Length: 358
Image (cartoon, rainbow, N blue to C red; front, side, top):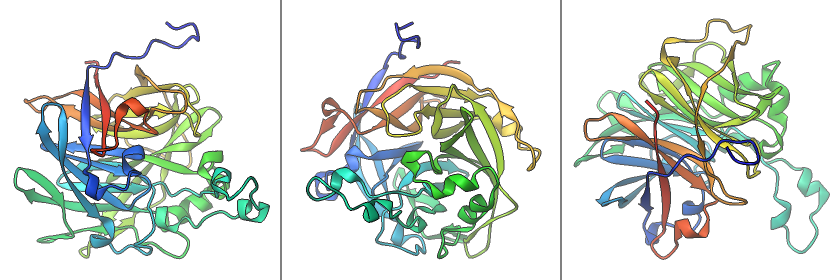
């Protein structure tokens, strides 16, 4: 136990080097990876300042490279194909790769203003959320020993919740929600709506909220998603809400592990603060029962994730399986990585492996 009252961080079992290729990277992606998902020989990662998914495959001991980038505008009918989607979640289920945007509002950053001052009218202008209102799935097809997202695979077609003038049907439902609605008008970094993390179990889709945190409790949304023959996704019914007791932390990522749900928890804003991995045992067998009542859940706190001051913010998870296919480790990807994690010449970043308690 540390002097500040928090348990000591879990030991790092090993490092995994992620190389995204100098010619394909502008130097931003390696500092902004926010989501990951490993499916056998393929590791998919996404950066929050792009609208693309990157694939890596094993390139040596502890090194994943052979980088390929898949632009979402080539796979999906995006309303704003040239805008960043603020990708915050990736999930694999039954041959599909699910992709999630933050659905968050943003404000111009004062530190990026010219000179020492920023115009108050500019500061008050909140950016359009539509490019970030993204919930989609892509069929995965064989690409040698790896997998690749595709637009069409036989009867399977890539699709998304249709993007409208004001976001999508999920954004509309949340704006009308009596509990979440007020937070949809607030920028994510100021306590507003910020969706980070997705887990999928058939037609059941769980979305983790970094914010808002409701009376110190994190919130998980559960959706029932239907797909049309065209591939377009449809929201069946209203989102269900679950409250999670996690000591005031918000949700930074989700991963389904068998019937369990792993939850990466951290600060709701850009602060450097405690981060931990939680486990909701048996989540897959415990669907939401009532849309008008919110049940409080208490997931098990598994381990503490180390973090830095102004750097090394735990942001994304990927299950790390042994040769027998059993996931006994978890890969943690860091946003705002410290200098000792970066290799700018090779456009590479190091992620950490931790043991998953039995």
